[in-house]
Length: 306
Image 1 (cartoon, one colour):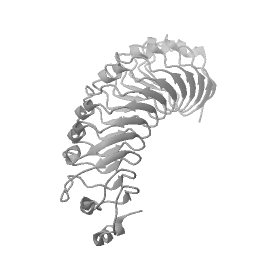
Image 2 (image 1 turned 180 degrees about the vertical axis):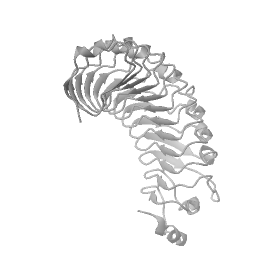
Image 3 (image 1 turned 90 degrees about the horizontal axis):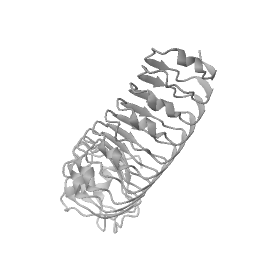
Image 4 (image 1 turned 45 degrees about the vertical axis):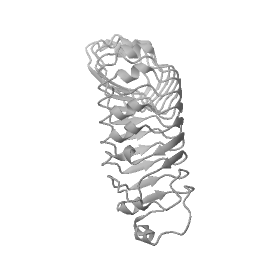
């Protein structure tokens, strides 16, 4: 059965409670002050109809390790007091109506999971975010964040990075190549410019890359892919990148999906595509290829979805 109605201050009577899970109910109204729940380490209010601001008092719950407020209608800024929760490991504020800038988060030294996506957050990504060395999952997608990417090279545990659908600009920092645990990188639909750094080729754990719909330019060479043996998805359409590799180049990866529309691959058909035996989706539209379709192309057509 589901609970409905509003949270009441009666919750403050459970002063020794350590875990509170009211997720997937029909609770509405504001989140009341929970500062008296001084032993609380786990709080899940996700998937309700909660509205109003995130109360400052949540920052008083110093033992808190897990905080889930996703899928509500919370609005206003993220209170800076959340940045004082040094034991916090999971912070999920996905799919609300939060706005304003990101507060300093450098004190969240235990954080492994941070999802602030699908809100209305704006302003810069604070440099302090790059100090969270235990962070494994970071998504700030579908906001209005702007400015350049800070250095993220100290995020040595990071496996998933999603900054897509924002208003980020400037270059992709070379420090990105220090994220040796990274498996999924999504920077799609921003205004990032300049070349993809050569350090990109050091990301030996990468499986999926999406840098499509930006303002990237410059040359992609074999060095950019030299250690990407696990890569299966590569999306770079909507940029002005130039792929320049040797005619006999055989990539170290096997792609299932390749999208490089509007990038420059021509004038000859890129012969390395023949080596991609697992390819099921291919977009090389408007890529400067001229002449006739090579006869060998018929060998890969049966496995394509396009």
